[in-house]
Length: 200
Figure (cartoon, rainbow, N blue to C red):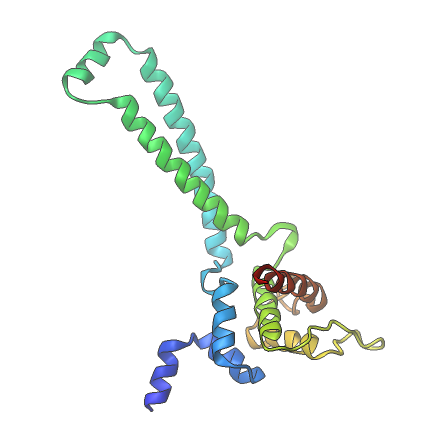
């Protein structure tokens, strides 16, 4: 019982599921899970909200820019009132503008990292990369061979990837089929090998 509690504290549930299903080392799966930013992946609803927030924050910055220009055109009487009150309006607006720019950069980074561009399925990308990195760290070869007659994977990695899509219920574009395992597998293989070469 103590061991089970320890596992729950140390390893994410998806990590335990992946490791148990494919007989991988838990520590390797957890390390790759964190490296692939699986916990930070945002879902479709959050992705759309982030895109909407980005539009609003850019609009907010334009409003602040206009406010700075408008203030600059005000009479010296208004500026003197601010000065006597100990208020520096341009500085306060500039600080708000700077903060808005920081938020814009954060949103752009998250949207880019979770991009759905060109019909990409973010969950398929993440699962494929996670699995490919686990394979490499476990000393297993990543092959993408296909059976000529069926079009199904003929390699251990290809078969594991299709099973992983089933295991984590990753939907394809039409939501009824699984994603193209070979396309995502090839992209993930290149990415995982680049991670390995980067550390050397």
